[in-house]
Length: 628
Ligand code: ADP
Ligand code: MG
Image 1 (cartoon, rainbow, N blue to C red):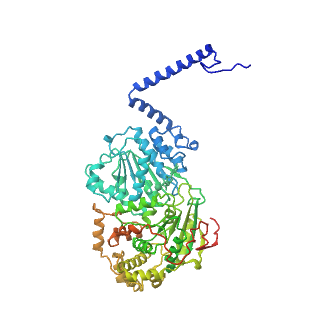
Image 2 (cartoon, rainbow, N blue to C red):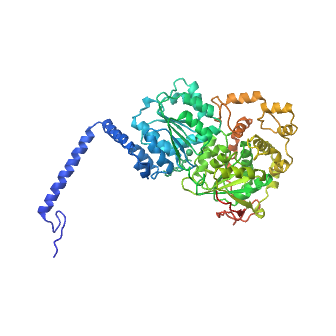
């Protein structure tokens, strides 16, 4: 019989051999314990320093081609743990290409499509640079992250909190909308500061003990958006206030001339990383993009019909102005299409904006009516549809808007609604920017007409009627103020039909249009001074009024982060100058946000959301454009 090996003490054990084996193991274990005890006796800082030196040595050996996971980078245990706990393991392309360079201390300009993971591409190096220098609260401000909007700043802050939670650095969010004095008291203790440009400059100017002389790293996120919003001068002023010996990382979803100008000003011998330079398309591959040509007076019917057939989806609808969002939000709440409706725009108070943002993030199915405020870099998880109800200002705005869906390998669908007068110009721009988009047609049989219903709402509700009037003027003005006159021509709009479609019996008088129509050299001069018109149908802001508003934007009670020197898009300007009506009264509708489905227009209850590519219910597929 074969001799069984048995274990020590087992029935068939060989006592001599087992004792030898035990002795060997015992010696090894003792040795290990002694080493561990010795290590424990050494002060923590010494062990840590050794670790840091080892990390630093490894930076030169980073080979981006071999990096697949975050753990392939020489990162501190604290950062790696944070990443793991937040379920980030594999790196995305922009992270793979930029983190190594940033760890080596290089300035980087990183451009990659929306949703490609740029946030971690700068948060990881930011944590590492401070860790490497064993930064303490006493060292003050070490990393400055500038974001275009408060919402994005807040979102970046949340990612930082999650990933950096094992480090001991302090982090702060300085975004305006709160008490300047309170912020000033805390600002000098902060190691990592996330802020919007206007508010930061305000602190640089007004908070005596705020200084950035120790700054190690400057990060500009969504640089293209910062510049589009007219913050170029503010950015120049901020950069002048920063020490020259610092590392700078600049991120952007699009490569525009102004981004390159800012890069020249703020970066030193930068490495350019353009992840999707050779990509066939400039939008994510998982994004299905369609456009539909729809006459102005049918747009609201179409939106309603769309929502009715997408009740289980999460969608964002982009509008050109706050007033449109405000009015249509109210009307749609009353129409009860059958899914929760939310509204996000720049006229809401900051708290309200945050509340709407988190509410929408949490909801499984809902529609968010928004201005371009929501287009800039915000990460809403699991958005199925982006609908551009009003034509975007240009192709870059289009790309940012659709970037709210199809994020990080997820799928998504986008629908652009164009007037026939906008089609040619916009399609040219999109094809130049390598945006693959197909034309689909509305199925007229499936279009639900809600005009009468809206008229009856307005007949009973004077306030709603006034909102409809403001919405009307505001939309016309936004078209008028668009720079690209080949796409946007206010005189081509069927004004009377548009008013009817909003539920108005007659079109309100629009003084600026009337004046433009009988333009004389005299009133042309008037227009150059008061081109931005007030919100009520025929009230023009005098240049004095606009100055007052400008000043207000710099006080601590401001509710809207806005450029001080307004150079950016006219549409932004417009939102800023609209007269301040009861901005936050959308809150009154909170209780009707979750509306129950009601069969208002006799649609069959069984008519459910369809997921097909071309929405056979509402849209007809016309032709697939040859892919660019
Ligand atoms: P961008 O700034 O390029 O538009 P974000 O940084 O906002 O993109 O990231 C988009 C989404 O992808 C976020 O939901 C983020 O959590 C997720 N994400 C980013 N990097 C990773 C990663 N390495 N692994 C998993 N998810 C990631
Ligand atoms: Mg981003």
